[in-house]
Length: 189
Ligand SMILES: [Zn+2]
Image 1 (cartoon, helix red, strand yellow):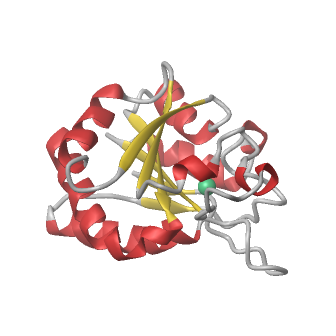
Image 2 (tube, rainbow, N blue to C red):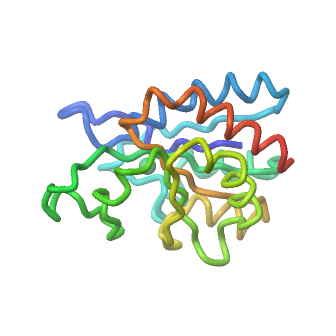
């Protein structure tokens, strides 16, 4: 099962959503089809400014009710996000996320895996690194339980779960990244 919570574009200025994740999910779906891996993609329809579906405040939303229903049948979960490219000479205001991550250091990578202690599935992360690390520029970054969707999957439903962020700028690499990720998922399952 794949969640893409930040899929809804902010209509006023076209920001605040995971543009790269929307693009990437199409490639991932085809790659999973090629591997005969069955999947469900659960896409968020709420503006992040109104309710951030990846925070515990979103627990009672329809998105989370559906999420809990779907997780009952899931064997593996990927929470898929993306981040904008921020150049290394950008200032802190542009570069630091609400959770304190520095997008200047993320931006040198095609893909960042956020690892949350006692939540993220280490074995799944290792499988993905083994499959993808030689081909792509990747990093594993420590993160927090504020990332609520992966916490729900892993802790409440005991489904092996990870959080992946793709670089909005790495579009050209998406087809190959998606097929490598699909291979890792098939190997893990
Ligand atoms: Zn996101």
